[in-house]
Length: 522
Image 1 (tube, helix red, strand yellow):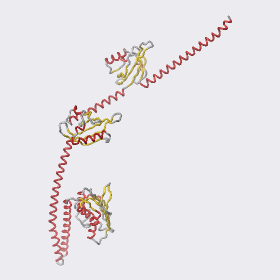
Image 2 (tube, one colour):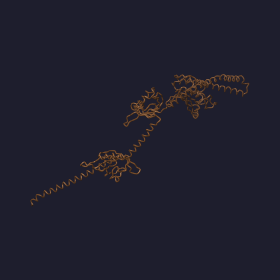
Image 3 (cartoon, rainbow, N blue to C red):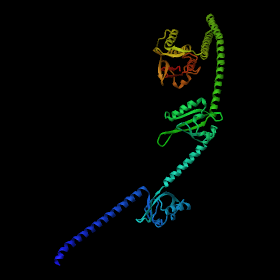
Image 4 (cartoon, rainbow, N blue to C red):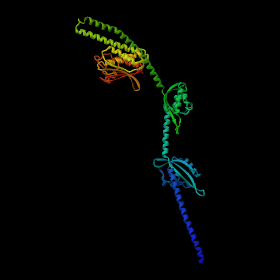
């Protein structure tokens, strides 16, 4: 017996040890399985919470038994209820019947959209999806699924729908034609106003070429512009176009067109807007015609007035010469017989007659400037200026004036009128440096805002720029007649000559610091 126990005791101990080993290993495996299950559940919970707003489960009777915390979802008020027992709005009985039939067939469902009222007066939109789950024996156990709050998405959809409705209203009621063309220039969309403007029914308009509605005289130009716009060579067009209606009548429209891009950034076509500007074009044409007629009448009246002025001035020269001549004879023959007052009176008569004669000469020259036919050719202004100044200096050889003229200053101008212009400008410079020591006069050329301008500059008495607007007006003088003689017409003659050449004239000066007169010949 002892021998038997001696042999059985190790076996028993080994059996106990083996049993203990299996028990420990089973506990460890169970613990590992539990940890794996908890980890799997945590991963599942994280996934569902990150991919949706909440997770739910229903039993085989479609009653909620699990509901995670989610936006505007109260698990306590949901557990034990079916979905159709919740305060859901926006679902009709037909909708619920269809949903229940899906559940009864144990089918998966996705994106069931409905509204809920979590708080009085507060409606929110939800979207849920669910899938049935089964036991090991295949028995139906219920549904699992997720829910998402889509209120913001629905609000954005509603806002977008409102905007689309407003845009469509604007599109349909606009008083301009709005249309789209594809990459081939075919009209794909158009509003009602376009059918009225082009007298073309929508069925004919859609699918037609845009350029087919342009007046034939401008059709190829329109095609070129459209192709350039489609090719991204130009960002947009804004121009007036001559169009033709389906009934053969014509009208003018102002077109604004730009490229239309797709989501991927490739150009899909063009969008265009056409405003009917026919009335404005007719008004512009009428105004232009009226202006042309008015200009013609003004030119005719001006020619008549100038002819009359020339005739009167010419006829006055004879009597004035007689007054001056006979006054001189009286003074020559009877000066010793007349009292000093009478002699003074006769001399004043002669001076007045001479001034009036100078004025008549200036008026005749002014008339001549306006009536002379323009004959432009190459004019050597440098040579002409030197010749004019030499002639002026010959009248007062006792004066010492330093004169300089830049070389090779040439322009396309009428030789006769150009000489008159220089005679007046250089003559003024000579006159207004008469009381200046070391007088200087310069003729040259400079750049003014990228434009070549000729100038006559002197260091004479100058003028106040505040009165510069009077310089070129006839009979306007900035200096007293007793200080500097003249009729006040010379600069007006200069302005007329420059204007006839398509140029402009202006002056800069400062009292006692000289003056510079600039001119261009267009």
